[in-house]
Each structure stands twice: as C-alpha cells, then as structure tokens.
Image 1 (tube, rainbow, N blue to C red):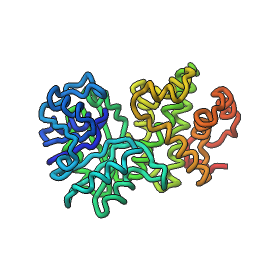
Image 2 (cartoon, rainbow, N blue to C red):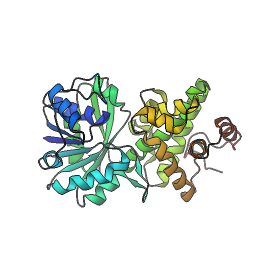
Image 3 (cartoon, rainbow, N blue to C red):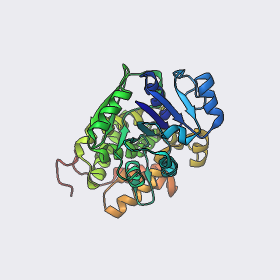
Image 4 (tube, helix red, strand yellow):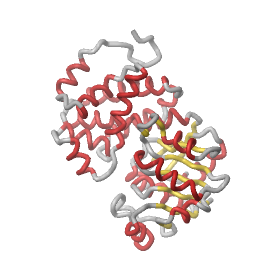
Length: 336
C-alpha cells in the first residue's frame, strides 16, 4: 500500500516513519521546503523529533499532488485550526477508493465539528476513520511499547490501518465508535492542563488521582450526550489517553498547565512551547457547548475561569471542593 501523511509535526512524522519501516511506500507532506530537504537528505526532523533517525525510504514533499494522487491511505496530522483548509487543498487530487484517517485531537469551533466530520463533509462518499490513543509522539518515535485505536465504521479501513502501522512496538486495536474515540482524544487535553497545574502547585498524589477519575466521569458524561458509547471511555482512547496526558511532562497540554501553575501567562506559555496545545482552545469550545447542552462539567468550567476570566487558581479550587457531592461512577446512580 501507498501511504501519505499530511503534516510534518511530531506525531505525523512518527507514524510516517512506522509505515515506511513496514515497507510501505510512504510520503510525508509538509509546507516547509527546508525541513522536507532535511528529512530527505539527512533522515531527521530536527524541529519535532531531533533524536529520531528516520527510515531512509521515507520521502518528504511539499507537493500536494505528489502526496495525494497515488495514495491508498491518507493520514491527516495537522492542527485542528488548519485541518479543513489542508483537506480542501488535498481533495483536489483525490482518487476513488482512498481511505482518509484523522489523527488530530481537536474540535473546529464553527459548527462544533470533529475532524472526522470535516473529512465526511469535505470528502463526500469517502470512508473515513480516526486514530487516537495514549500516543506521546516522542515515545512512539523511540519505539517504546505503545497501543492505539483505529475507529471507523468501515472494516476494510480498520484492517488496512492495522496492517500498515502494526509493529513490534506499536499495536493497533479496532473500534467502531468513531465519535467516542475522537471525543476522548479531544477532551482529555483539557484535563491534562488541569493536571499540569495541580503538579505545579504540589497539590499531592490524592489530588491527582481525584482529578483524573473525576475527569473521566466528566468527559464520558459529555460525550454520551453527543451519542458516544460510554464503554469507549474505559479503553485506550478514553482512560488510557487520559492517564498518559495527565501524568507525563511529554504532553504539551500538561506542560501548559504546569507553566500556568507556576505563574506564567498563557501567552508566555504558548510562545515557549513552540507547538500547538489543542487543550487551550478546546477548553473554550467545550465550555460553551456544555452550557448550551446543559451538561455539568465543573472541571472544564473551572479551567475556563482560570484561563479566560483570570480567576485565581485557589479560588476556583475552593469553589470546586464546596460543590454538592454526587455519585462516584458515572451512569451507576442517577444524578440529582
């Protein structure tokens, strides 16, 4: 199979490298000509994965036609803000029978569109999928043992992605709940910011445990209101992704939260990071959507107040701890 990955960031480069290592003819598309040359000539992406030697057969290009026209599987690994624009550019060169897979963990504010919904609307009649899970790109690139989830209603698409990406260190599980898998990947970024803040404030291990478990309840409650399967959140794309992003300094969103907890401004934090942290924008989008749907999301509301209303962290924490105490496990007891 011929594979194309749109987006030369850390995760896009990592999965392109896996596919190339599996003897798939793989093209990595990116806009930066200098970085494309660096990948082709030196087999390294110094900006995003400086410590990873890339497979020599991996080809980088800035030519969208070259990237798309002969591909069998197309992975879209660009930030959510540019996702639709890149797909609109790419679809000019599409051919029948191609499968399109999003690896982006974010939400488009206009119309509250998930990336799979953008693919479906822009690529009418195409089979699409979502790849998501506890996949820190730098660890994937290093060859650390990792598992992910490919979600799609198309069995052939799921099977092909498993064939292309499965390796001795990267395991690909299948799911049909595309919406649940994608929402898990987007929502957990919010809670990673909260966890990073808790770590910076040295709130303790009990606090971290409480935050992660309440985050799981909150994100699953919201997703189920939108039609997701609650069981999805017990798997890799739910609790698995939540744990890794809420506990690892390799997580961009965790690092944003840690910096905010240490007193940095949001602007300073984002500038210093040098990469997109989807959770910042997702917090605002989800907060507004939860209000519209009347879904209770106290952690999202609290983070929104800290980031966008500049409410002191200590005051928000106090308000959270004074809330009514409800059922522990979501969906077990009725909410009052």
